[in-house]
Image (cartoon, rainbow over all chains, first blue to last red):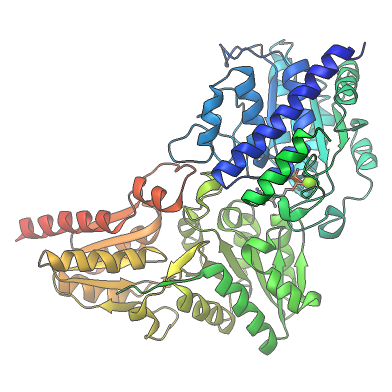
Length: 277
Length: 319
Ligand SMILES: Cc1ncc(C[n+]2csc(CCOP(=O)(O)OP(=O)(O)O)c2C)c(N)n1
Ligand SMILES: [Mg+2]
């Protein structure tokens, strides 16, 4: 059973709102990472507003589903989703990256309600998510763990160590999602360090693999449901995305990985987002 | 006194690498997807055949550099200082330091200088790690001129060198820049009788400010720039202890294991005097404006003045 028309519309509305909030937030603080936040918008939104069971009133509820933002620099989009969920007041978004804020430049599990794992240094998230999955399994718990990786991030060797471990232990309560936007910090992934046939690689490591358009909430939702049905091995959903999605002058540009937004750029971006492209 | 805002060290480093690339056809540069930040992008543009951006794979980068150095090339390994220690740590210890390979390790965004990215990206334990490695030379320049000289010295020296590089624009320090940079030798930037302020990196400038403030209180403070943390200029440190009878060490690093530790180890053996430490006090810092972080985590000239007053009290008590 897929997403209903109504739910699809709700999620798309949230994505539009979140992109706008992202621009407002990053423009006002003049620091932070727009590109990788925008490519992950539909993925994070579908997880938090359709898939995951979490309780903002009780962030440490032991049966909650877990989300690990392995590509921690997309923290602003995570914070926006958490604020909308009610983990903390939306007004707090304005304090992003500022002294004494609970909203650190990269997620800090000690400071921010709803953040499951401190991330930022790339490559550690998948292993930690597998540990969460293993912990759930040996304690007979039903929760799922979702982990979002960047495509540059999977150049880290530890990701492939995790890939082997996930298959060996058949950790099927973990769903990895790859934000395959084709761009990293210094340039296109194909130029900086080509990944080859990513799907074939994960298959050969013993994972169940799925591919979706990472900007279509219904495809993301269906793939996650499919992942839940597959037993005995972990799943990775390869989400084809566009870095900077929704703001045309940012799209596909590595320069927009983590650049401050000027007033003119901000105004142009908002106009475009309001236009509902 | 400290002059106008100079260039960012990382920019000077990038430009110096380009210059060195002319004289040394055997310099090769490695980066791990942060070439725009480390400024090695400049070298990459000038010498594309000698530039290797290996993607987000720091451990692989360091081990490749170890290998290439055995063929007569001089590799520069580049990433954020925190990742240099945490990701490249094993190849640095097990290949580079152990075998004394001619590899240069440039850790940029040192200290709290990558302030907004937060504690996950700050680097306040790199000095501790690097100086605990046998065979490692540890260089920590104070300003743009120091940075250029340190990079050149790293190439001239045959063996492993760690270069600690700051992210942001740093004030030029005229008293520093008029003196030659000699690997292993501290620079006395200002003479004084009552106490010695020993600093490294960005904190050298802060120590100069502190000396001025102390002067207004009638206290004569010597200021020493320790740009080479290893090998440490222990003769100079001993003389300072003897002649001024008290020491404050200031660094943009944890108070555990950094320059403060190095100085205390030397002074404790050679000429024990009261000593105080200005640095990050056994805590993770946080995201925020750089200057605001320095203030909150105790790294201003005022903190150095306070520490100096403590030392002078103890010195007085000693009689
Ligand atoms: C271990 C490590 N090395 C380097 C960095 C610096 N860095 C932050 S984001 C990034 C690029 C990430 O690219 P990708 O994984 O493709 O993320 P996305 O395109 O989704 O933003 C880099 C190199 C880091 N955070 N961690
Ligand atoms: Mg990417």
